[in-house]
Length: 338
Image 1 (cartoon, rainbow, N blue to C red):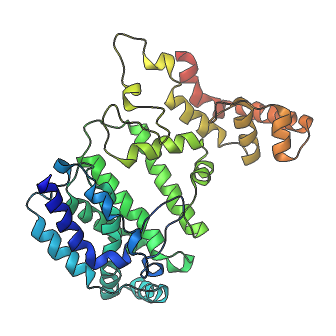
Image 2 (image 1 turned 90 degrees about the vertical axis):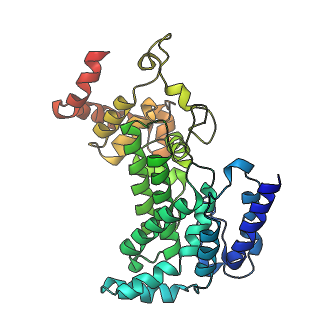
Image 3 (image 1 turned 180 degrees about the horizontal axis):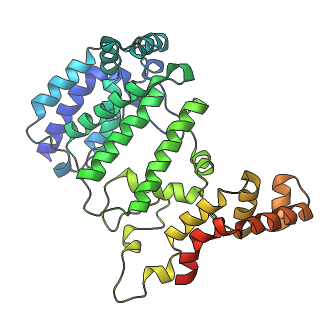
């Protein structure tokens, strides 16, 4: 393990310049601004994670000197407080290129902190940083200081998105279905919008509600984008499903015969969105759409603080609306195939 120990020591030594400013970014606790944690958080920087990587997977491949120079250079750039970020954002809105460069440079350490978490994911470390920097530049261009959201909170999403997209493009050997990629894209848009509106990291439940899908669906999508995957890798955080579960076995029944058709679910969701929000929710709860658990009229009534009979009336009205030709037509192809 001498080669690994030597590398691990080298990398930690070079990261000393940013130890004081490292963050532990955990979506469960909400993202924090670098300026809020620039003192007294040396232990938060998870450098030990780097040293715990497999020997063969943590090799810079002739980029040691580049890493050393880059880390020391970005360590010299002072961090910004929120007021300084706002001032730069105002200048950027007026087309000030110098302000844009200053905001980017002040957040390069944020990119390194995030990129470290994707080491051993299929791309060299410097490539991860480069992709993260692309996301940072997009965040600078799109940031709206008037929303009241901290720049670092907003930028984290763009940095992660850029890195995970690069991993998907360059690191995967298994192609993700188009409808799944679309779902991931919609999840990213939902996360971005909610972050701006709520001024904090949204929970998985809030994203699910915004998208009109189940919490389990969001867990599955997060599992897919989290790392480059092998056929045995779980695609949900609970570890209930592997990608191999969705690969057709020629010696067994078609997955269409055993797994609820994803395209049908998507079409049902589109049709349900033509209803009012309350009607849509009642139909979903009544028939277990997105949750696989049907609820009684009484249970739904308690949720809406309405009588059992009133829920039945709303359900009946919604079903009548769904039978209208312009709403039912997208589902006819699926009905004819069954």
